[in-house]
Image (cartoon, rainbow, N blue to C red; front, top):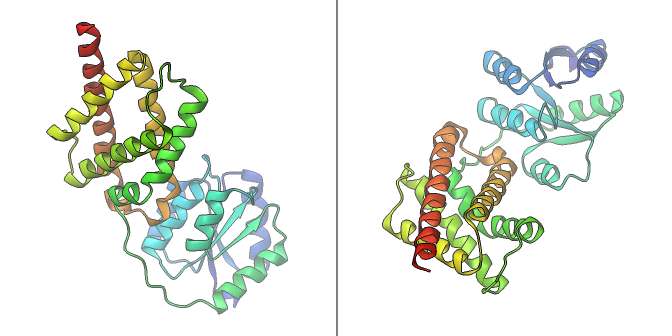
Length: 273
């Protein structure tokens, strides 16, 4: 089996690229190496592979998911294996269970790796790819999770001087904010609707009443942006990569526009005081 098996091996550590592929070649595999996401995408676009073996973290944490996603889109029947030094990394394990054929803990034994490759290839069946999700869909599906992360981060770094809402009310408001973002991305532009403008200005006025400064509004926006980007990163394997950049542009523009309107509402109340 090994003699005809073509493997794409992706890892940013030169020592591992020099050693493990050489050992796999001794077992009869045809191995192509890549040191980055860009190199991996170039290789998988150029020729077919039977197996992808990727480190989980290529330059940045979770980059291996990006390679897996690209392989799933272009070569859906390729066996995908992830190498990780973080077996308890919850996000990795969730993605592995749903999208990746197997994962191995570094340093993986050669025989363990070979056995996994051969077992997965023997049991390989044609895949029916799930329809990829837009970023708007991903945000709607994860609104509660995003809200919880934002609340946790606000508690950690952003003390509200005069809190006037219960936590459930704050969570509901954040979920509305996430749904507004999703609606803007569905529309394809970051030009705010009158409803979103009024919501943002009302939010700014509320924050003024709670003792927020304009700088605190900016920090709150950063926290929200970080939570949303984490959510997108966690869902790269199911994202529609063909729309990823346009959607991200709309997302960035919408977050900036909502922040401007919130600051305008905050400033209007400050002038009236």
